[in-house]
Image 1 (tube, one colour):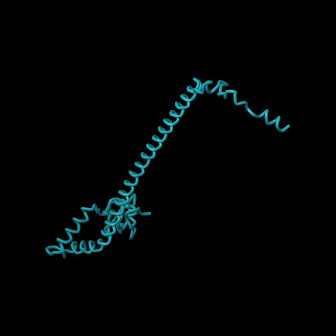
Image 2 (cartoon, rainbow, N blue to C red):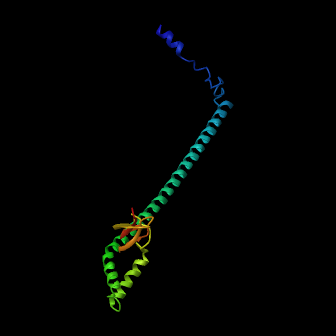
Length: 194
């Protein structure tokens, strides 16, 4: 019985092989048929089409990666330059802040007439010139509106007729470098009388 089943499963070698559409895949003399050539041609065209699509996709992907890398590099450069400028400004501010007490002493001596005609007068002028070159500006002028972000109120003077808080007297000048306050001005504030 096993032999019978085995015979049923065997395919006769004389039957031609069938193609996808049930057509023979080769002619009787062993030559490929037209259907075989057409399917091979279609397969090659399909393969070429798939490969060209893959190549196009890879090229687009690498172009996208290159553009992203270029943008990332430009952002990095900008960030480094911005950080470098911020660090430079911070260092300049700290150096100027350290020299402010000496500048205050020179201004006090000048206001008393002690610098006139002395070599320190030239030193004071050079220091002011250097500070001006970096954009150092003074804060605190009599009559300007009181700004708690720029002024430190040492005293408050009730003033009849005053409508808002203004600087009545500058005790110690403040300094600002760019948008960075180095030292607030110490002032007496004229306030409206209650």
